[in-house]
Length: 137
Image 1 (cartoon, one colour):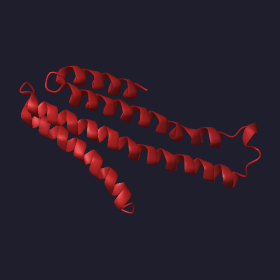
Image 2 (cartoon, helix red, strand yellow; image 1 turned 60 degrees about the vertical axis):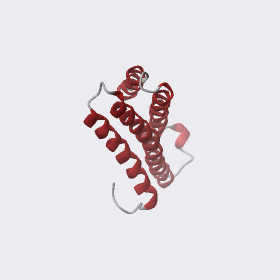
Image 3 (spheres, helix red, strand yellow; image 1 turned 90 degrees about the horizontal axis):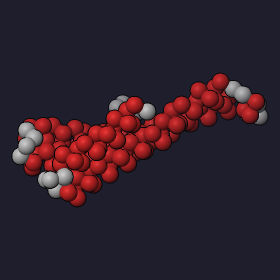
Image 4 (cartoon, rainbow, N blue to C red; image 1 turned 180 degrees about the vertical axis):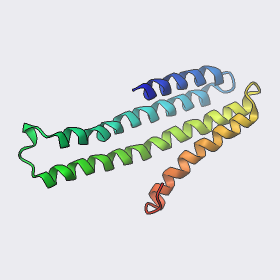
């Protein structure tokens, strides 16, 4: 929750700081950042679900232990897919912020380049998961 609150605050701060460079590109970067945060927050539900599943409870008595274990693994796999989707939104937002920082004149240009490279790394890692899933990330 702390990370999500920080990401939302960061999106707002960068929107305000970069709005003078290009209002709509800054708004798009903020929107992509918020979409990334929302996607990751939804994916984290699947990350914490196995603790509920494996803890047991009356509602899970109709499942065999193997079925419960399979549900827990499925939940973790869904979290991984949500994290992959998150990186697309998050990476695109950082690429746009880096571009705006480079163009701004009041941020150091090297910082804009670093932000763009970081955003591209998020996007490339996402494509690697899709195109070469057997390579560990």
